[in-house]
Length: 286
Ligand code: ADP
Ligand code: SF4
Ligand code: MG
Image (cartoon, rainbow, N blue to C red; front, side):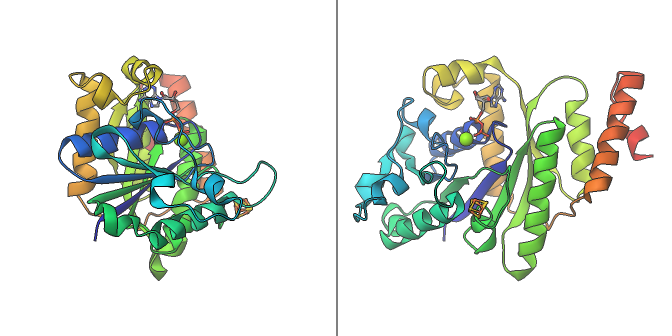
């Protein structure tokens, strides 16, 4: 059975960028990869396909027609198979239910038997962890979840909510947490802050991805960093991240902070940084 890995995180935090670079790095290393965009934004796989938009599964099924595999799956960079679940008509229907329908259809069309992937990546948003968006965590569809977070409070807040969802479903067969992917890391406090949050919630950062202009430059030409700037240090970070998440299969049930605890934790960090202007994570922990 292939490894099924779900990437969650706040909107705009870098899930699609990170997921596509993981897919490209794995493909480069010889893995057969399927990437399924489960965000109604439907732009998960664009940089694997020269910036092109893919027809979504939900668009293809909306008129009641039965699409074939080749109508909804496209081959991207180095053979990565790309799928976009899509979203409901704005204002109508449940985006979460749409994800579920899209994944069921992929199973019915025998995508996994035909493509025989080693790794299946689900790029899912995580601002809301309603029943709908928790589907990939909940129903045993995925083996492990990785949560992308920067050091911004709202990103950490979304990560903590995802931990609550994982914590709820993992004991009854839901996915466990592989770890945090720390994104947009800059010199200063972002790394110690994320490390402190990870330690307090019983997890770890599996990789620290720097904030880098190479990402935006690659995106402008509709490509991943792996494809557009293969010799860059940023490409090597994505290669290391990709290797870690397929080779290190350890996982935990995270211990989310209570909402009041999380707010107090953030305030302590804020006070400390405003006072000292330098990261002193040990002082926060004390
Ligand atoms: P999401 O899928 O979580 O909504 P995206 O992957 O679309 O987020 O990323 C949002 C924006 O942030 C994109 O323009 C992307 O290029 C940029 N971005 C993501 N990660 C980085 C990074 N490490 N360095 C610089 N820019 C980044
Ligand atoms: Fe929206 Fe989530 Fe409710 Fe579906 S389950 S209608 S996605 S809030
Ligand atoms: Mg996205």
